[in-house]
Image (cartoon, rainbow, N blue to C red):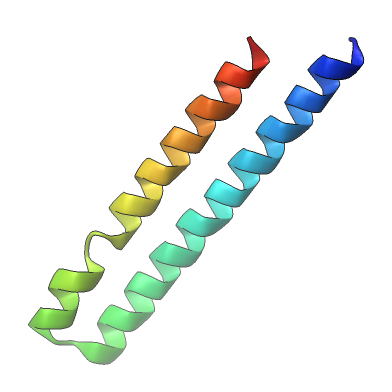
Length: 69
């Protein structure tokens, strides 16, 4: 492996790691907030947060995968 490929692999792992951590934190925050606030209005605001973070995860993964090519 040359230095560029190693650097790209490290970048991919960093991006995916950040995205996974953000997704897990968003999911935990969503569940905790929903159980504490137990109101319909808060639920409508908090419900799409895990989906949004999941989309961020997929986008960051695609960017990292494209960097390898």
